[in-house]
Length: 422
Image (cartoon, rainbow, N blue to C red; front, side, top):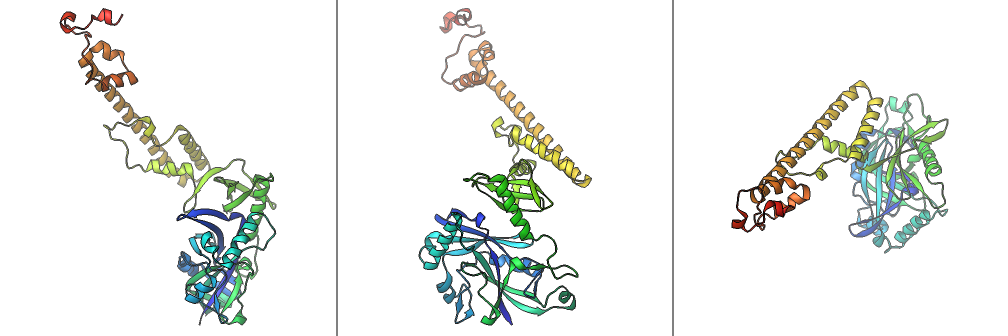
């Protein structure tokens, strides 16, 4: 029998943000759900099942609570579900993040203000942003699945059954409960992803530091390090075992290396700016890659100035530093392709420089010859830069001057050269 299972997690209140989307103001509540290869309430959730279905959460509704009719769960997309729980919220930017699924609740503020539940949600978020002591906001994803009997090996890992996922229906926003749905209500199980047990051979308990514990320690350490003043704040946008993305006072994101020794976390003194794409990508690296994969390099007869060159001196120095760090940290296998890219960078840079120099000299010679034809070599050779450009542009309007020509001044009406240039 297919049943609805609701997996609940807590929203990271420090990562709540506001954005204007489609001309309307929105609240964004980032959250995580569905950890892979864990046992929750006796059920094993294989990574293969989650990977095959998690993208189905993109664009689903985020109702206020799991909609129920006569004690039975219903789809959030059904008429009853819409009437009960819709507050203008839906799920976006669903991605795999480590062992979990990351997704965001986008709440249309104007739509939320139209309902009592929506107004309560807005007030709860505002209270969290003000730093008041209020209950946290939880989210709960509704997964329709079949319970398949576990085999002997899976039972040895602590699983009574294995989840065979059918579909994702919604990811709800919870204000008053961590888990409202229980087996006694006849439809599903409310399981808490924060209490999930990872699969480990010959062990049915959580071993070592959990992802949640590491996240909480990092958040405390980031606040102590980067938000010491009363009017400052900092939050963790993402992290790995050795790096953490920090946003300070609503500014740009930076990635810092860190170490955890004896429970104490220490950070590198300097961080690097990053931007959010499929992952956090250093800004300079993006430009480095685009430079190595140029498709529109200047042709030999192209008039291109130095301002059109793709990288500044500072950016090239940044790339050089990054290359040095990569060479020091990586193996011989990684160094070879990196060296090839450096060679390509130098070759492309030289080709650009030679092309620009040749073009500039050819263009200057053409202008000087045109000026000399009208005004003579003395005038043409005496000009350069902007003066040469100006004289070249006005050739059509200027009267010929008696430069070093053999014309008689009396016949041309022009003054003699020794008088004109004295």
